[in-house]
Image 1 (cartoon, rainbow, N blue to C red):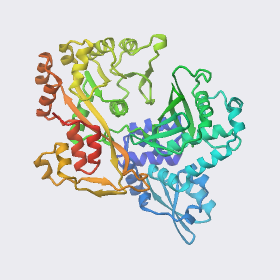
Image 2: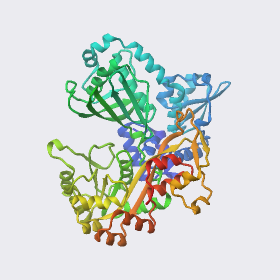
Image 3: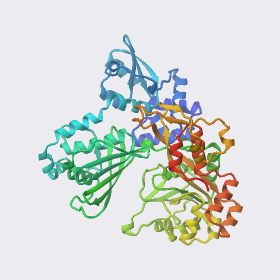
Image 4: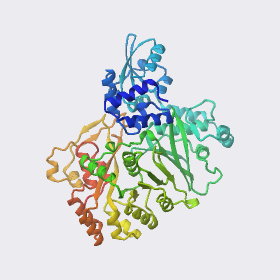
Length: 575
């Protein structure tokens, strides 16, 4: 439950117009459920950004703000507070002068914590504000040495451990729904190894872990910011042990090695619950394992954080508040469609609306929204779930994906009968979605009557802020981008990443989205009914103001947010 101090913090945020009174009550309810600090919950729910929280706290408490990435903290200062305390309370000692210790934390209103630190350190504590994400990054940078730990772990595992894998794994397995990633000396070495593989992936902000068997080696790769990075692999002899451990965590059959299997599990890491989806696929040299990491802490539910251009965001926000119709988000797997849809639902989520989703799988659980996981094995498909929803008095419906005629037909009918329907398609751009629906068997007149807006999106890597440098591209590259002379006269600020420790030498850190938003205007409706191809629809949409994926990428490259190479790699030229 919220402490008196946290309630005072919440009331202060309401007074400063950072959040509303209703939002405060919602945040307090969520905080009672998950046990996180109130500030963490407010940011997590998208009610306020870290900037807004820091500014309000600083103004109210008269405490300065620091960016930890601008500091190079001395090792002696770091050792002034025990590492366990640092990680438990998410704080960082920044500077020390005599008996005065400067501590960076996200909520300096927690006087109980400040008093405890004063007693522990025998120093006068001077608090400064920093983003929680900045603090976590600093903890990872200064206190974690995963590679050495990994190498030491490999040395500790003996052939006996591998031979006795069934006994080893079974001895530490239990009936609880959650596993703990904490490295315990009493755990079997193979269990520690798998925990370390997962922990290292989380620390690197990876979205996927790939464990791939080859004839004489085992390869481990993490997908970070959309690109795969090869890591130090365990020896080939650990292959079966690692696979078996992951199968047990995921409630899969360890004896079945001939067929693909899918599972999931959840871990508790320093009080934070993280979900994992596991796919095991037999290959020539053993089973390949891919683990998708679903970290709610990395889920952005604020539309302003997704990368929309201001005018596109205004149009998108207006469309998701319409009372009925269909909104489609299209793009390949891993292009951020789910994040965009969840952000849209979070924006319109209020007690007066009944919002229901049918998904495969339910990647993140959203408070106040009824989410259904499809179960093909018992006949619960997208179409069946959608058909059931229409008897549940919904206002807003999300269908994870339109895969067949039956789902498309029910979704279109729902959009025509007073419901707002969100869904996804797998097409290359927004205009192609019209052809996809008609190819499924949806009559063109029903497409024009139901679809309000179609969005295509891609994810582009963001240039690292710490090593970003000016870049003058050659004329041939600018020609490949399709930039006009008028655009080039606007003094574009092209950048590239030089590579540094912060981005592990890649020049990129984080990702941003490129959007192509097409409104189904009266002219486009008539063209759809007349059976015009997608290229003609695209030309008309651009004339009406649509910015294509390549145009969106060019704009972000000219602003220095992403690189020209990224734009060329994730978008196609406009014909």
